[in-house]
Length: 309
Image 1 (cartoon, helix red, strand yellow):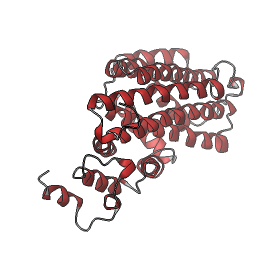
Image 2: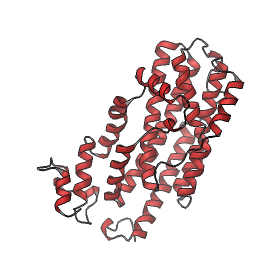
Image 3: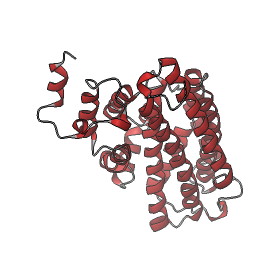
């Protein structure tokens, strides 16, 4: 079965093979670009001597929160690898992702101690506290986890990108600003890998993929809420500063993803997902008929109920 075979004629096994082939090709392209344009060194590429001990406590709270999130790297990688270990492209990406994220944790800890905002003893005790908790996968299938990771990585990028702008404008800390800019590039690259993965799923498993995107958008939550001891304070600080909150999530995370996939907003996606359920199996995203995207003449839920869904 070749890639020229119509998607509707592929067996489930044939679809899965093509999905995995494209994931592996996607990882190889990702890796080459990272090696050529994005690799950096924690100890040399950030001007640590320019840390500013007068940075505000709000910014310190945010950086400490980012360090906490990155501290669950062993859980993130081990649980994901258990789920997708047979997928060479995704498994290898996860291993590479873990390496890149480990540098992020090192950078946040280095800034906290070098700036004098936290002592090494405080960081050691905090790390031990975090190690007592365990992060578990929020969704139970590889496809849903890829949707979640696509959204989460863009949200993380937005946090770092917006905080970098604030630090450059108000805090006079070239070290932190540089770290945020460098690391935000890693995060948007991670988002791009997962976004391209969702495009692959859309090609071969359109109905299930649309349903999964809709489910994750309705239930998504940042991982920090599950283990930050001061989550309420952290959430309030980042929202008050305009770094990340409900408004920013819709405007700068959810809607750009939907627009890139060809949908105006979540309701537009919901309408397409519901209508695709009653479309012929031969129809994929590349051949969606006009009626999938037209405004509904009755509620989308009614369309599904009318065919016994």
